Length: 450
Image (cartoon, rainbow, N blue to C red; front, side):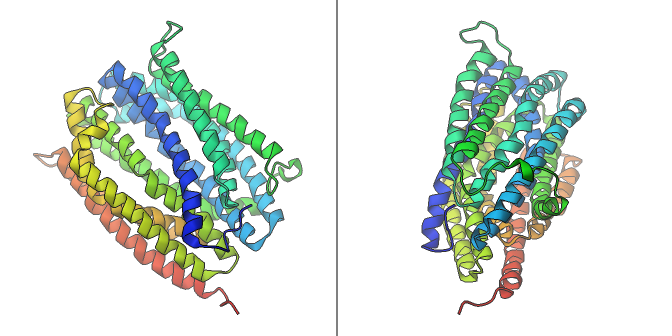
């Protein structure tokens, strides 16, 4: 365990954020590598994989339940120097991961067809998306175990092992993708299904490596069979903190699903361009997300240690660093967005849609960074409901107006992207107001230091 309740706050934040950012970068490379090779198969394949990849947000919603709940409780226990409670939470998180993995496999195979038929523009897109998703489902199920173990380490102030495991898995995915997708060396291409299998096999290797780390090297928390029997009280503690962030990711699934449905009348090229733009934007968000992910355990340990002044200092540092990074990336997207997407969109129309999407939505990058930072602090405080309320506000400010716009004559994609910018700006403002109130109420209950 690394004690984050002493020493410079900004130093701790950067030391945590750097390996988290590297790990998240390599995690995103999973999808960019697949997208690059799938792009060689045509627009229907790109649109199908992009639409199927949207299911990842739904699975991430479930993984966030475990990740945030486990991380926050272990961070609080680490701040209190309560190793027994930290270990109890970790082992119950592993049990919940097994349950969620089973639900993902069964539900995914039953529902992938109806979902893709609802959002895809053409039969070829449905076929490609189904093949990819069915091959990727085992990897999505294994994500629960991988995320739980990584989040437990983050709660104890350790981030490097997860980073190294993610690097290994991405390198393995990069090696498997051309073999399974294009048939390099074997002469037996599996197309979009190969992309899914490459990711699933790589994630499986990552789970094995992380389990070996816990079994042989980790000392603060670890696997203990005596703690594997279900403990409903611990489950409630994890779910109370983790369910709202999970619901936030589920709402992202809803927002993206609405966009795919709204723009399907523009054809597979538009859906492919939006899919490429979204994947690139996710990669752009990595620096701000890494800062927010680092702020959560840092502030969380100080909440457990009853150090309110360090909790506030964590927010200030994270907000300033995250905003500066996102401003620089916004400038890049304003300058030449086509440079960021041209490797993944070979069709002229898809490239045009992806570049215009990035150029417009980059106006909300700073606001998005503030939303991430606020969410990290809500996790640290142990009350993640305000972040969910903030995210749900986009049902009123984005989803409802988007459906109205889509039914209007002369509807253009540009209008949808501008609406997204306005809704995220309002979400950031609401997040800041709710965080100010949460910090005032939660930290007011902490006794002042002698």
